[in-house]
Length: 226
Ligand SMILES: C[S@@+](CC[C@H](N)C(=O)[O-])C[C@H]1O[C@@H](n2cnc3c(N)ncnc32)[C@H](O)[C@@H]1O
Image (cartoon, rainbow, N blue to C red; front, side, top):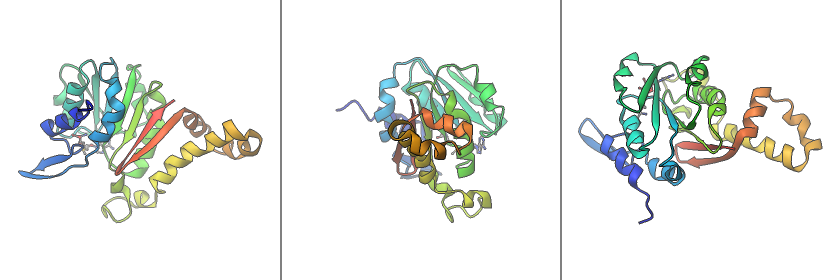
């Protein structure tokens, strides 16, 4: 009716857990149900020619979903598992890498039209923050950076996670810190707030200047680049 719902249909078709339902070992269970929300933002990009990068490929379900949803899009999957190079096909490329590897920006530098990055890999807060701070600057203006499955880093959710993850600050606070300081310091009262802003590492100051919006969907956060 409103032209939305196509992305979830494709998520169901390829069986990614981002969809409203997910089939695992023959059982249909509730999925994360992110796609209805993402589509509100992603629908205007549908006919654009651009690169979408996803961190974490697994079966390749979401890569195939993105490929069908964005008919002119180029999809780049990143994963630790080198065997997933078998997912490569027309309009789908694969890079074997850790999502937090320092040379990942260099490997992605050949793509100068990245409008969407989705982090769906380790789901550890520390990793999510490191990848975000490294890769968000690579997005084109107007692009989206989505971090999924934030609940996995919540204390006690996955006891097997390393202690570093459990010690990470609540991701929402982190996201809001990235937004808040700039808005106040740059636009409202620079004399009062600039000294505080200036205490942050330079790369974080630069990153904050680039965030236009942050939106929470249960389990996931969407940042838009200015
Ligand atoms: C949840 S699955 C991805 C699901 C896929 N995006 C989908 O929706 O169909 C997570 C994947 O992330 C990969 N992974 C885990 N930690 C990683 C890391 N630090 N860097 C890169 N890939 C990682 C795993 O090998 C696995 O294939």
